[in-house]
Length: 124
Image: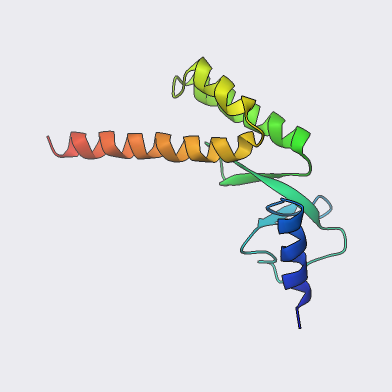
C-alpha cells in the first residue's frame, strides 16, 4: 500500500516536476526531500526546480515552464555579465527543451573548473 507522500512523488515524476511550491507559506521543497517541514498542505502544487548560481538558496521552484525559463535566463545573464560563460553558451542553454537541467549541468562544470583552478594555485 502506498503512502500519500509516495503517491505525490509518483505523480510529480509522471508530470516531470521536481517538487512542491506553496505561495501562501512562501516555501518550496524538492525531491527526494519532499515535506521537510513535516507538513504537506492542500495548497502545495507541482513545480520545476531551477538552480541558482549565487544566492541564499541552491534552487528556485517555478510553478510552470514559462517562469522556469525566465529564471534560467536571469541566471544565464548573471553568469554572462560576470564573464563566467559566453553568449553562445547562454544561448545554447536556453535553446534546449529543459534549460533548467542544462543550467544545472553548466553550474556544475563552472564550479568544477573554479575548484581545479584554486587547487592548481594552492599547489604552486
